[in-house]
Amino acid sequence: MNKRNPIIAYTAIMVISGITVGCSNGRPPLEKISLAEQALKQAENKNARSYSPLEMRLASEKIEKAKEAIHQKDFETARRLAEKAEIDALAAEAKADSVRAKAAIDELKESIETLRQEIKYSSDQ
Image (cartoon, helix red, strand yellow):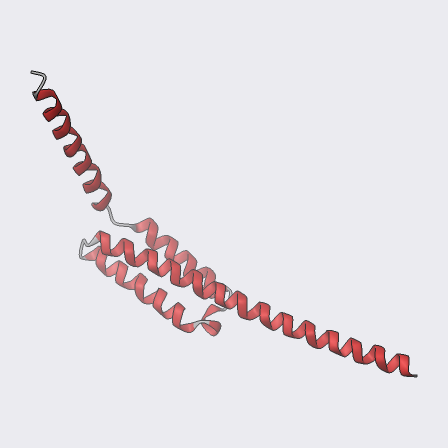
């Protein structure tokens, strides 16, 4: 009897593990796609299409491919594509933020230089 208990316990663990993995892969990753779409929309709101069109296009394409994978019941591929799409959208947003920040810095540098010239001109007179 003692030899059967470990076998039964091991079998039960394997069955439960299989069910858990099966259930997690058996549902469409709608939340992941929603997160990717939200990230894409947020990047669009920050005008990322102008600053990083490649990343935005890649994110859009991956979202569409993820939706196609869901229709084909390939939920694991859909999940991976949605996660990659979210990363692409976040990268596009970060790039847009970076370009805007650089433009603001350049503008500040110009303003500082103008002020320096005005101060120099005022002190010379």
